[in-house]
Structures are given as C-alpha cells and as structure tokens.
Length: 422
Image 1 (tube, rainbow, N blue to C red):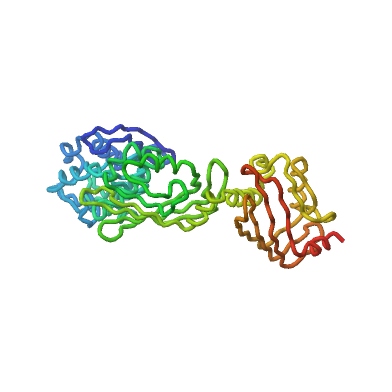
Image 2: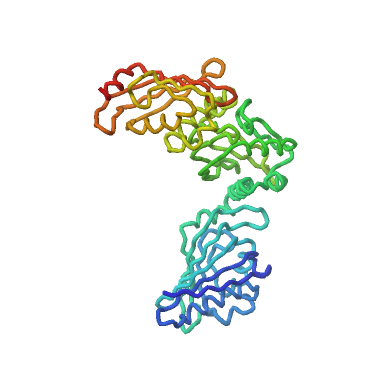
C-alpha cells in the first residue's frame, strides 16, 4: 500500500508535549479509508487539546473504551460519562516521540502507535520503548468502542504500581545522556550513600551527594559497549537493575574484562528519592585487577583484538616499537622470532592454523609481567589438515609503560606443532 505521512505538533493542553508523526496506510486504489480519516482527526483533536469539547462529533453516546483493567490512570475502562476523566488522566503522561500508523479494517480502523518512552509528568518515571495498537470499531463513521492491545501493559501499569522502577529507568537514561549530575536533585536524596563495592577501581568506590560529580567523572573512564538493562521492583519500594555489556574496558589503556554485568539496587525514601545505591558486579575482582596491574586487562584486550582480526591495525596501541617476540621455533609458522617490523608477518603466519576450542586465562606476575595461559582442543594446519590434538601453553609477557616489550610463547609441546611442518 502507498502511505500518507502527516506531522502534528501537540499543544500542552493535550497532555502530550512532543511532535506526533502519523502514517496512514491507504488502499491501492488511492482512496483513503473514511474510518481511518475519522480516527486521524480524533488523534489530531487530542493533540490540539480540543477532544473533550468535540467528542460527540466522532464518539457514540454509548461508547465503550477498554484501555485495560489496571486501575492505573488512563489505563482503565471508560464510557461517555467518564470520557473527560480519561482524557484528563492521559494528560498526566508525556508520550515521547509518538508516531502513529493507521490501517483500515472491516468496520473500523487499527491505529498503531509507538513511543520511545511514556513518562509520568509528576515523578519523571518512565517506561522503555512501547508499541501498541488501538482497535476502533465503528458504524457510519462513529466510534462504538475501542480496545488497547499491547504486550507492554505491565510496564505501563508499573508507572503507578511500582513508580520507582520508572524513576530508575529515567535515571539511567539521564546517565547515558551525560546529564545525571545536572539532574541529581531530581533523583537522589542529599544523604544518599552509593557503594560500588571496590576500594581500587574508579567509579566503583563509595560516594555521596557531595562527591556525585566525582563518581560521574570516574565512570567516564570506561566504555560499556552493548550495554543493556532490565529493571524489576524489589521489597519496600526498592528497584533492581540488572545490566550487561559486551566488552567492559578502560578507554585510556584498552584494558578489558570482556563481557560482564551485574545487579544494582536502589533504595528510596518516602519522597521518592534514592537514599542508597549498591553495586554487585560479576567481574569485580577482574575490574580491580585492571588498576592493581592494568597490564592484565591490556593483555586480555590484545587477545580480543587478535581474535577479532584487528590486532595488526592496532599493533602500535599495544606493542613497543622495540618489542621482541619469541615463539621458540625455527620451522613452525607463527612460532619463530619476530619484532615490530615483522609483526604483520607473525599474525599472517598464525592464520595458517585453526585453533579449535581455544580458551584463555590471564594472571598478574611480579612487576610488569603477565601470564597468558591458553588451551586448545586441537590445532589444525589448514594447508594439510594435520593436527596436534589437545594443546596448552603459558605465554609470558613483559610490559613497559603499558606496552608489550617482550613476548615469549611458552609451550610444553612445541615439538608437536613443529611436526606439522615435517
């Protein structure tokens, strides 16, 4: 079907303070459904703040409005007698970035709407993104009944039944936008206690209202790629937020703990402000290790880049220009001697193998030494198909000023690899 898109900017009186974009699906004949035209006019009137005055133009006196049975404002059942109440209750929310799409159906119209979030104006509590459908049953261009259809009803209800969940969701959104410190008074009590569970890692220490800016600044030292959150209500108005990210790392050094996550808990006072926030991080010890011996995290980042095929392009980030790499062999590709100038050759030679079932474990040694222990269920020389069977090794890596100065590929059964070339 072709589509017709119109944009309507809401008035404050409508209770929705963002721009609304509507897309109307039209029949292939090019004629617009009269029922969907009525519904589109209804939505425009709601945005303009005139729907209560104009309701009898489009709604049957016996109309039945089924927007849920939750008891939450705007999400209940209504009739013409309670129509104005419904509109007033909907005005308690902001519908951010609302978009509509209309589709004709037999005896009415389907109106699908999306928002990036639904926000309670009074508290700032928010949902995540929502997608809902309103089914309009109509006779002669008059609306007889409507039904809200959505899988997000529980999240919408939560704005009323567990408002602190929505407040935390909004808080995290502000953190992601870099405005949480500016808005801290909106969310945090002046006596708030924040406990990140670490005495070493920046951003994971203990903070209060007066050191809030320090906390925010310290957290900017990290990258959280692929970060995702799930929120749930806890006891006595508390909120749990479980988070995950693909590769938690330190921006300055590239040190990483790989994929990780954790669970935060927020406790609230009677005024809806956070009085305590506690962290439980899955790889807390590994995060600490990036600061007790940051070379461990750098080594893990190196192996991550090797696995991703990006280490050649980023070698200057990790390796000193005078580095020495010793694989201990004179005949096995990838296990000979190399330096910064022949680094690309080293990585190219390593591509001659298939390192099956490879796993790594990183540990700090004395001084600036890191041990990178690995196992593989099999090493296969691609050109011939010859294989070693299970193998393991413990690479010994010396760092200077955060870069690899010396790299020894220590392997107990190097002769087994060399046999692939005989």
